[in-house]
Amino acid sequence: MTLEGKPVPAFDMPTADGDRVSDGALKGKPYVLYFYPKADTPGCTTEGKDFSALMDAFAAAGARVIGVSKDTVRRLSNFKAKHDLTVTLASDEDESVCEAFGTWVEKSMYGRTYMGIERATFLVDAGGVIRRHWPKVKVKGHAEAVLAAVRGL
Image (tube, rainbow, N blue to C red; front, side):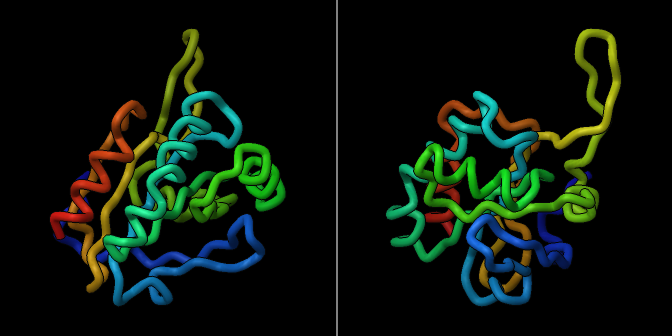
């Protein structure tokens, strides 16, 4: 499913900081939504640290970065504090936002199938249109590639 060129699906989620983040509140500036499977796992921690390390550059480009998982707000808050993450972390406990973005998918491991979040990133422009979609993200170098795309808007 490609969402590039389409309006961003509506969303409103609680964050690890006790706030809320929504498509309506973000309109007017570009932003990045990156979906990751689970807080405090190796790949997700690396991805959060990589985006956090580039937060000044994203801010200079006028973009906000939001990580989305189905973890509870409390777990996200602990994850953020433990690893000194500076990105906004949002909780999609009911998977509705993941469903809307096509990141809630069937996965398999060790012969067992289950539903989970596919690591994916979306770049949304100031008008609320998805300009880039990175499916099945490989973490290494990804934050830098996303920053380059933000700068190219």
